[in-house]
Image (cartoon, rainbow over all chains, first blue to last red; front, side, top):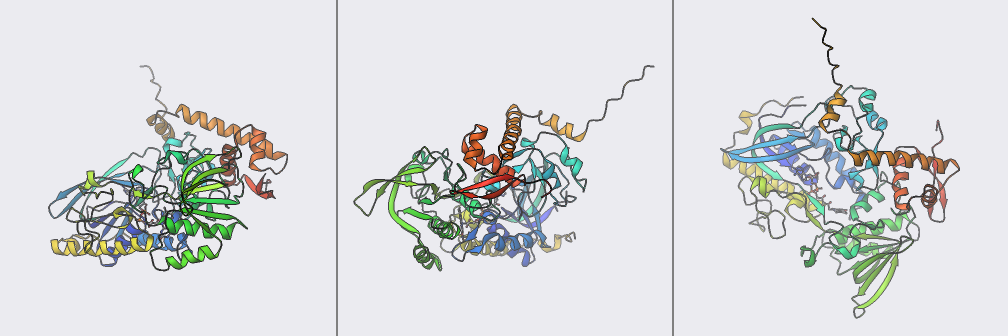
Length: 440
Length: 98
Ligand SMILES: Cc1cc2nc3c(=O)[nH]c(=O)nc-3n(C[C@H](O)[C@H](O)[C@H](O)COP(=O)(O)OP(=O)(O)OC[C@H]3O[C@@H](n4cnc5c(N)ncnc54)[C@H](O)[C@@H]3O)c2cc1C
């Protein structure tokens, strides 16, 4: 494994768009950054999205150049498949303990050819496609993954050894063990991003057991050209859906599940997906059941108008219950808010739950950072210092600090990088002097 | 003095297997079922292009399960799209050499 130096100016935890941006901004200023990602690839949620609102640019096309830049920047040391185990204040900085999980191959020798994956005999649900598609026990995380290196998921392995036999780079190393690594850093930026509220958060929406009631992230994958089906089909039986419903606020603004806040992106991603469905499937009917539409960003209101003009239907209504019918269609009990709370049953062929955002990681145990009431990282001085946390020298960026879209995550990452740079300067952090030459 | 048989050096994959206590019962069952279903799907498609519900019927499994397994075969190039009928995509075995 390429070695990790014993000193960096900053540790960035999480390699999504926010973490990459913060690392790049610090790197460009001449700081040495250790960027740690728990997954086998950087890119976060964004690299798996189909297109982005409101521009409808291809998401991975914007994301992958950032990923490549972060991986190849001379001042950024990228460490994937690694978790942060402990962070302790030590003098002017922090002592950091990392756990590097074994890929069971020599990462520097792997050429990413994928021969091992082709030879592997077992297919299991692929996390990148939210279970809808398959991967093998040994696999390249996905086509846009950086690094393009294989990883063996030992839980899925049948120990046939075929990957080793076919590997042209001779890089398999089945004897690898998890490896503890320690280093010192001057500042920490937490950019660990989001998860969506669990499918079973609301029991009357099917507890995640109805195949044609799906998450919006799964829909992003289904709409992607490199997605699990190669086109938009419903998971229960492969039918081209002709009538699709979006249930808004299906995991936000709901005290009953402990998520009273608005997740800020669901109206927009639902409108985006709905509009694209109108492009992908001839004559498809797409209906959003909503409480109110929040289209707050630059160009968002115009995007909403465009979706309506292109035939997306919106119905002000609360969905009380979803029932699966015998042919895998769904019946939705809707309370029509604009029609005296009249209750109706509406039939659709596919349902997407616009689930809310929750933090992917809780750093309090490891970093001592306080959480706000919404469980995202607390910014005690939210108005004037949004990326500053309750622990000096630690900063937050992206959805780790609260629900937000990609442009806001990028802006906030820039702020976190700047705040970290200012902090290092104020501390007299002796970065440059201790800096070792960057290995080529 | 008697020659002690030198123990055969363990192959690295055997070391990994031993460290992880071998293949779990669930994984073994899953793997066997997956192999069986792949065979059944191949047999169903040998008769010509089929939709997912048709494949499910031929294999005696629920359509959601058939969908996953057919898509897994599609992902790894064993199955390809072969037209559409009444809102269902038809799938076929990829011809050898194609
Ligand atoms: C369905 C859906 C569609 C969306 N569509 C759009 C859109 O069209 N336009 C738009 O602007 N926004 C969209 N968004 C919002 C967008 O996804 C987020 O704004 C963006 O992904 C936030 O980036 P992030 O870096 O903060 O978090 P993430 O993308 O979640 O990245 C966090 C990274 O940190 C890693 N990580 C987590 N925990 C740890 C840990 N303990 N140690 C190390 N690494 C860790 C994760 O593996 C991940 O790589 C959408 C969101 C959803 C759910």
